[in-house]
Length: 567
Image 1: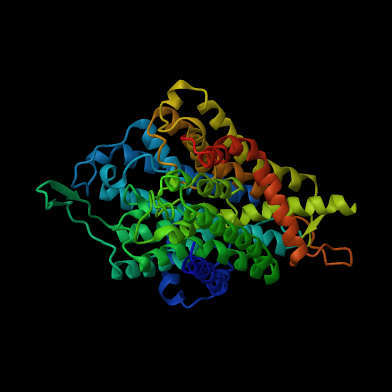
Image 2: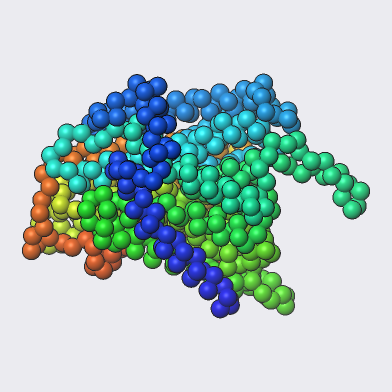
């Protein structure tokens, strides 16, 4: 560990916080239907899309109509992407002649990208054609991100309105999010990445001869444009197999800084957007403070674990940090920062191999996912996930003082608490249920590269990543099998929509309730007391249930390593 490393962590954390308010204010204007500086360019396109789609932008939907439109839209996206993947071999822009994917891999990949997970049980540059990358995967990168962001809008309306029968129009929220936020930011970021050395072309792969006389194939493609939305939309699926560890995706410190910032930029800014939309910006900053506390702790713990090095190698006289699976151009500090950012934000991209982290370093990444992907979580999904925990925190506070709990001026009754618990319990059910089955099935165990505690960690990480819609992996697990492809696909779908439906049910219930004014007995939710309570609820409800499994996995592996045993 060095002062330079700690300064790098402090700089990245400060950078994402500094940009949260201006970006959050802009998104508030967009999502609240106000005018922006982009109106002269984007507004005509927006109106034309409504006309082509037969959408009445002024007509709002009930919560049930809103979530039905969302589910049908995402189901259609799944079908289209599945067909593109299966028919890839006969579609254009396929200079390498890649065949279509098998049924189970097409199902897994379609579920992955539609659910904003972007788990990849394949190598992008050896499996996907340019057509598939651009019209299939990249399109879903935009639409899955916009879907998550759209839900923040009716959620804010539910708290700001009083006795309202409707919560907004899904098609309007989806369209404005895509046209005014995701698309412009992606264009600007792609241009910046190209300027710093990321390729953007449709060329055939380059055939080169090495100094030793061997033949080498150098992959090409529209990398920068895919990379921008994969980071900004917390999608995470890389153009290349090794993701942002590849020198074409992430050639230097400039691109690394831009890409790491993009992982958190929108998710953190949405906390400010939410606060502004409900008319109480301090409430949004309270949520953001909890997110940043966990992120800072994750960065520090991961950096300490990786910079401290491998005790087995140190016993042989090898000193220094753990550089296995890391890029020399980034080192331990930037690798630790990215690991905490990508797992806290449900992004899933990597600039180092998490399977090669020290056991405690891998534990940080695994635990941040298992806490519910709300720190700050995916774009939109992290914010509404954090509100679920806030509702439960206020329920606990109400029990302690013996009064009906309230949050942001709305009474919390049995329905809201039950729906919040249902959404929170889905993740552990998926992770622990599928992990338990995989730990005893012979066909599932054959996919492990490592036995013992590390093998269990690989299984836990795979289903934590799938259920939490993260997408990163402990790469020692071969997930390109019918068992893992199918079960992970199911976990991705349930982990996404099994939370969205209860959230929208809460939205409908709260919107119909009268908005109450604050009284002397109202629990303040914009101060340190609430931040501490919310932190405790996240740790207990989001993390404690995984403690036994983590002890048998990364914790036991670390103990064995300190004892000088192999694993």
